[in-house]
Amino acid sequence: MRELVVLGTASQVPTRTRNHNGYLLRWDGEGLLFDPGEGTQRQMIHAGVSANQITRICLTHVHGDHCYGLPGVLSRMALDGVKHPVHLHYPASGEDVVRALVSVASPGIDLRLQPHADAGEIAPGLEVRPLRHRIETYGYRLTEPDGRTMLPERLAAAGITGADAGRLQREGVLRGVRLGDVSIPRVGQGFAFIMDTAPCEGAEGLAAGVDLLVTESTFSDDDAELAAQYAHLTAGQAGDLAANGGAGTLVLTHFSSRYGDVDILAQQARARSGGTAVVLANDLDRISLPKRQRPPS
Image (cartoon, rainbow, N blue to C red):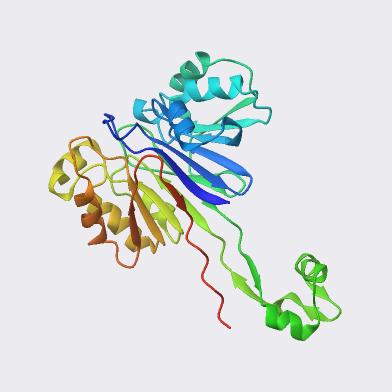
């Protein structure tokens, strides 16, 4: 199961229909909770998300709309008796804020604080890169290792059936048949999460080639001066980011409360997104990673 559960889509000020930030990425056996703002615990209930699903919490930065929901989420995990370790990733400069938030949460879970202060891999397949905001901010990228797609017709012609196909994948050769004879390369799926940033090299690196790109779209192109002043993206800049990186699907979120109708933001992003599909996120949406391309025959 690989899907994004949208728990909130508002930026600094929530609205009647949009909660503060909050996003759960379900990725195989892991659950990565990104930027839990106020009300995330309640949104989890509405979305049918269990506290037991969360294995990592990733903060891009410590502005309140991206982290003030942390104590409630941790307290709920303690109340529900979560037994597995929970890794909390955040910028090292936010140490005091993070420890203050953790200190008011109910104790009882195996919480492992993992600050980072530079670009690089912070867990298997999970990397961070610096963004350009008013305080230290990082975006996240999760990448599946490349693999191979087995071709049924070639397997059948080689006489490889059942469990032998798995054995061939593990060992690389079986009864004179090589893995490369019956399969083709498969690029691993990728996901990127980019919040609160002006256009920058870090955002471009995170977005490059991912299947699902989640990024802020705080301002309309008409308010580009405000976006620059507060170091945020406009909708059109989000579209540029997706197009230049060749992302499969762009998910727009983190909307300013100044826009009663955010459809204009989707239109502006689509005008500049090239071949990238654009999805306007709403609270409680579930967005699956795009299906892999079928291998050529």
